Picture (tube, rainbow, N blue to C red):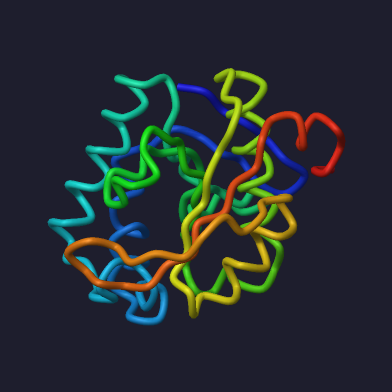
Length: 181
């Protein structure tokens, strides 16, 4: 499993002890407000999600990193790369995404972690293009996407959840030209 370090964060592989903070984050209605149908996740669903994140790394060589604050060692959420199977119209694609515990919001952690994950995707995984998908009302994620150099492509609706989303994208050449950093 790859580890990526930034000025304040460590993006690392998943550990068994990450389940408790992951489950707490996924049980917060405000954190989950714009995720799929907006419902919170049970501890069991979070455990299944954690196993899937580990499996994705094994199968694809990339995935979602656990995000840890370097100074304290606290796991505050995740950021990284996934295949957005929930939105078939964008496939084939790799998505950059993030989710942080509410107490970690507003400190620049999402941008810092997503920047490192995006750079990993282009430099280490050889990706040429990465998408990001957000609920239309999720303004915070929109700001992070703008900082990452992603540009709006189109709006659509997630099948089965009927949630309105905006699809953004960025190409390796844009990142290589120095948009990030």
